[in-house]
Length: 186
Image 1 (tube, rainbow, N blue to C red):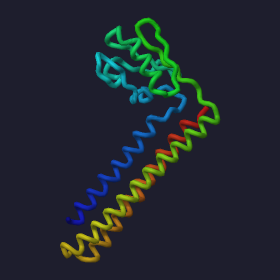
Image 2 (image 1 turned 90 degrees about the vertical axis):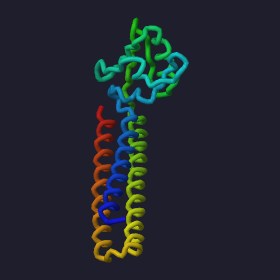
Image 3 (image 1 turned 120 degrees about the vertical axis):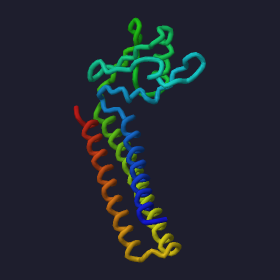
C-alpha cells in the first residue's frame, strides 16, 4: 500500500468512529423534544417490525412534546404500545388520531447520569480512533518493509496519522462538550 492510500483509509475509519459517537449521542435524551428520541422504536405493523417513522409522521410540537401521526389510523394503539415497550422513560397518550409523547424534564441526578453516559460514549470513540492510529502506523511500517518506501516517507505518514488522530479526538471532545451543555441546561 502507498502512504496516500494508508492515510485515506485512516481518515475514513476515524470519520466512521466519529459518526458512531454522534449516533450514540443522538439517542441520549436532553429534556428537549427531538424526533431522534423515537428512532429506535419499532412498531409491529401488519406482522412486521417497522421503524416508527415508516408507519407515521413524527414531529416536534414544542420543546416538551412529540407527536406521532400514523398514516393508517388503526396503528394508533400499536404505536403507543411500542413507545412504552421501548423503555425510553416516556409515557405516550392517544389523542384522537395521533399519539402525544410528553418529554418530562430531567432531574439533577438523572442529568449527571446522562453526562456520565455521554463521557463513556466519548471515551469509546477516542479508543476507536487510537486503535485506528495504531493499525495504520503498523500498516505504514509493514508497507515500508514490503514496498521499500523510505523511512522518511513512513515518518511523514506517521506524523500525518497523528494529525488526524488529534483532529478527530478534538472533534469528539467538542461533541461531548456540546451534548453535556444540552443535558445540563435547565
